[in-house]
Length: 213
Image (tube, rainbow, N blue to C red):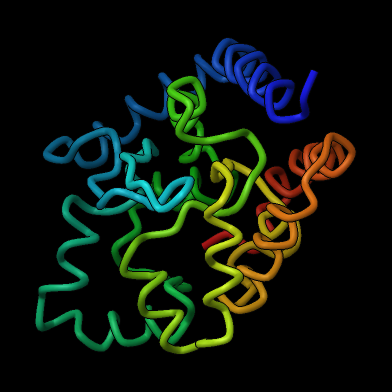
């Protein structure tokens, strides 16, 4: 059996198992989100992400911020300084004031990423792969790091993943140029042994909360 077919079968298997194991946690998370900010949706109201071959798709994740946080950051004049900092920091913010109390907890332990199990079942994502980027993030960062254009192309040649090399190597502490290099390296060299090494590292990273913002 070809690696790509085996990887897809493993993705479906792991997605089903994870859905069963983390189902109660996901239910509790949804309740907690609605109790804290009942006016907002359970899932993050964010733009589509860039998937395999540049195809846009809706990524499912639990909402960890105030309602309309993504849009407000880009349009509210009062948040202009925060938006500038966001772009300077490789599209990540430490001590982001938009994050809710529930959001801080679920982001630290990557619980907010659990709904992406549905993306795996739909074939839009893999359990292991490059980070799913925003379109404007890729556009802006390639202007900042022009040498990464070929790396971006390579990273987008495979399905993005819930976890991956950069996620187990520092997460948000890694700048875009290093992150996309890791993603491209994975896309070019991925195999079952590579996947297994990343998979074994993931639970410890999740429990430690290292690099989460």
